[in-house]
Length: 352
Image (cartoon, rainbow, N blue to C red; front, side, top):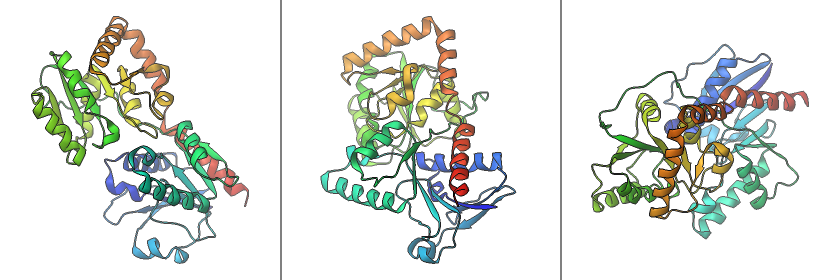
């Protein structure tokens, strides 16, 4: 049996993108239960996990974090994100999965250089590197010295039950509405949607996510100043049932983000056949492909007109376009994603 450790530490924040990636990665590994591998899941101490026949869990602790030389050896140690808190001892072959270099857009120059230095160190330490989009792969190649190492792109899977209608949340009224979701930070660019709502008197806008951030407070202040409190709803973090209902009942999904390594909500919305409006930045054109609509700029008049024109086009051809969007989204499955990682595990261990 080949022994693989998968670092699932980021499930400690289950509502974040890395948290969702980690939990779905683990669940699909358990579902597939591949022969020839024994998996160890490294999890935070307060996290309960249902394991499979060939899966055990170990809890994180100070020794594992600060004295990796005392960690036991594995055939492969897989860090599921680019800035792991836990590292293997030297004998374990190390896979590092890099999701994004969003700090290049988000941070000022001093912090940007600090993060680049830290990522360079982690990539130097890794034996194999994977990433979640070709855009992120190209960004790594442009900013990091790979010292001859190659990068493999493996797209994320998306898990959402489109056969379940979910539960209508109390804050969703009887009006038609647009939907968006994400962590409230500047890169999400949610504030550009507020003035657009002045042009859609018969719609509400629901933006879900942890609004108790500095940027979230800024957006809430703008909503109040623009007298949009009854039109723009910020419910905070939401349940999966509510999210499913909002995806399935929204008129469109609006996602003007400035920086994404992948952009999982884009494909989640597409799974329901919804028209998706995106920015043209970072990975979004790659992930949305020709199944999405893209803003050329964030001018209020332009965005409003663009949404109206494309929404009318969608509504006139709803059955055809909805089916095309769903078919496009189906290519992003966890079964495919984990299948590619298992192939990588097999390739690595066959070399031993």
